Length: 150
Image (tube, rainbow, N blue to C red; front, side, top):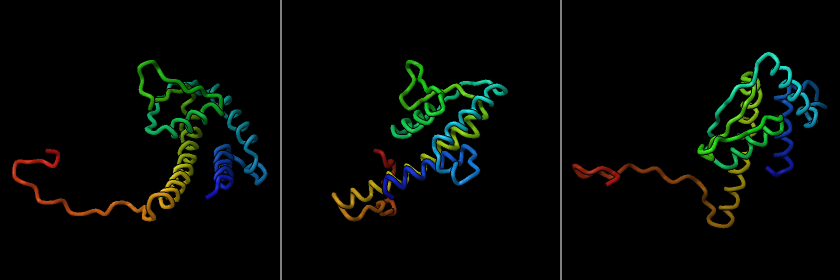
């Protein structure tokens, strides 16, 4: 998958989470963002923002989640002493559970697939053509009284 195709798929994911109803809306990322921001403003009136804590294990996931939050004017932060893997946000529960997190998961799946494809291609070109997982073999017999970590 090339970058242009990936960008288009990411825009379509955003449009889907914005509740796009026409093909024109599905293609218009700016319109999708505006619709989600309007929905967030409406939701915030009935469902006041609360604090959420997210643990995102890898750097690119944190960057993606933080950028998605900022796109909708939700400010990600971390308290002093919290791990870098932790991001905090204040937002209405219905927005986080119904839009923000599902959209993040969909975007994350697309990016993960793209990153895996690019990684496999680069490794097979530069290091070795076989990029398959290691072969699983039976464990050797253990000596009595010893563990595998000894």
